[in-house]
Length: 185
Image (tube, rainbow, N blue to C red):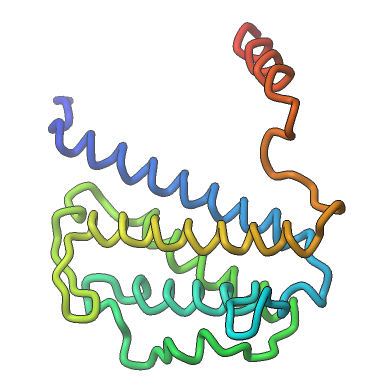
């Protein structure tokens, strides 16, 4: 068996990394969502701003629109009502979880199926040409930004009850020690 072409190896590494990073972003968001009380989902810092519910609605709508028919149609599906995503639909936390999961399943499912050769294929998003690689990068930044907004809101609403999703303040040395210990095993 011969060696894979360098660009295929690089493309495969990129796809694997994008998938792993976006799975991590999903897990980060879920760790924040699991901490919310029912009243936190729809709360906003000021009138007219996004709530956690609105962020979930928007992420799911975008994921369905951009990824359900990748390469077959414009990345802005005709059935999408983007403006409605930014109006609180009054969904229950359970309905919002279903919305969240459905969107991520579409997006991550497509990332799982893409092949290195797909990265240079062309597609359109709102009539603008992109390669698949550019579309992935666009969404990695977009989805990460909204998930971090969601984390910020969850942390704000929970206050002192917030359970950190990262290394706790003042615990960096201990974390590094534990990582070194694991590496030695």
